[in-house]
Image (cartoon, rainbow, N blue to C red; front, side, top):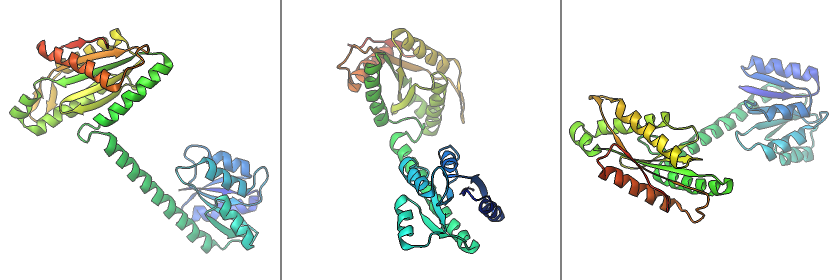
Length: 305
């Protein structure tokens, strides 16, 4: 674990560096407050910082204040080192955002246990962030395919409509249905059906751009949101996807299976100021119905009206 050692005394830095290495830490040295702050602003920064109070360019109090003002996550545990020993000094340090306060000359045993406390705090915050991210993913993603779920997709369509109107650009939308999915479930079982849905999700990703958004609308239906796409681009993407699906069988636990998809597509220009996410879905859904009515395994493009 990296630990920042910020002190303008070379002797102090050497002593601290030796102790930290002895305890299994990776010291990162700074000889003044500005250098310490520059290090802490970078990616991969130390999560625990030993900061001297009195330093040139920026003192330890100012470094602590900057950390608390500008760096929210991941949390940096700060221990202020100083020859000051008064109660008012402790209060000032804590008010500046320091987590701990050690007077010089420091006792190595005290410093060691204080560092352990700092590690516990940072580890707990890492666990909290990971749990929060997991909850966010559960709330916005489909558990089977790991694509965005219906609610998340609707919110993204709303944001994309707003962005397109600001940027004066078009949006494309694909609504996709896996043909004869019920027959697949009936013939091979729902586990194979799940395999097909996951593999279809993966194949759709290979046929779209990194900034396109793919979501599971429900059952065997999917939505793909295509920024900066008009009628021609929407049709090209749809046909590329359709051909990719039907030309190569999906490998499953029951062997290779040939499947196909039907696609209903639409696009909206920035001139459509009253466009809503429901309107866009409605037009694409009608186009999808037409594609299925035509015999499936085809693309129907419908102009937004």
